[in-house]
Amino acid sequence: MKPAFENINAGNASFLVRKFEEKNFAAPYHFHPEYELTLILEGTGKRYVGTNMNDYYPNDLVLLGANLPHCWKTEISANDGMSGSIVIQFLTDFMGNDFLQKPELNHILQLLNRSMHGIHFTGNTNLCKQKMIALTNEQSSFRRLVLTLEILEELAVMEQYTLLNNQPVYTGLPQVEKERMNAVIAYIVENFQDKVTLQHAAATANMTPHAFCKYFKKINRKTFIEAVIDYRIEYAIKELVNTDKPVEQIGFDSGFNDISNFYKTFKDRIKMSPLNYRNSFMKQLQHS
Image (tube, rainbow, N blue to C red; front, side):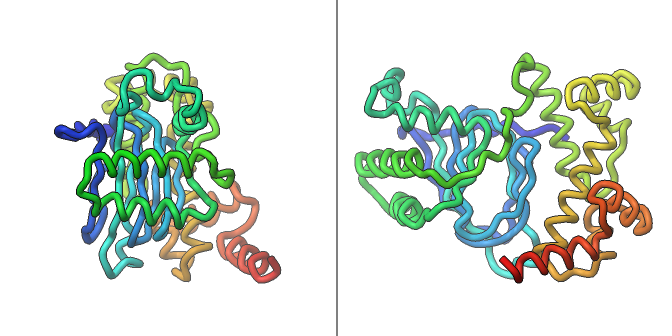
């Protein structure tokens, strides 16, 4: 499965604002040339941005740069209600070709430049949330534009944030190579909890398995199987610290079909057993 290209049609507007209310977020791992600001209103699950995976909760606020692959996957078992979000999408020139070059808007331009990494805002985002909600109800196109600029202004001066990818995804690669690697990562993201095969990944990249192995390791500095295991272990870690699921269930949910292999792989990577990791985390939490 390759990351889907999303064709966004803003109609007569210079940017697009949408509110989603659904049982589970349905969008696959995808990308588009527009910047995207996403506020989670309801639901929990896993957020995938480039090669980064993390948990999301209500009030999660993330700004994504152009063509940065992403998706939000609802944790169905933990989310009996609805999933909801507000999404703002816009191109760099949504206010005109040179608008963001004005000195008064330099900090917003810097914000958009940082967003190529994906930005998770960790400070107090209540004001941005209020304005994004107001934006979905605003009928005046002029006021919608002003609100969008005010939101970007708030985010540009916010000092508490995390870059989701310390390096832009596959920086320096030609576009065709970026698209090839994004297709492979999409295959991993969509399938690591189930069955992932080297043959299918190689076919996704339109290469022979032997050539693909060399190609993947050269670009990622790890083997394809190591990359799959990274996703599985990272998923297991999030589940260990954020749920009370039995360790064996977490192993299966993470894509390991052999629990003894899960224990061994986890201990080799993290240097302690899954149960000890959970207990150690809980102790640190109690003393923090």
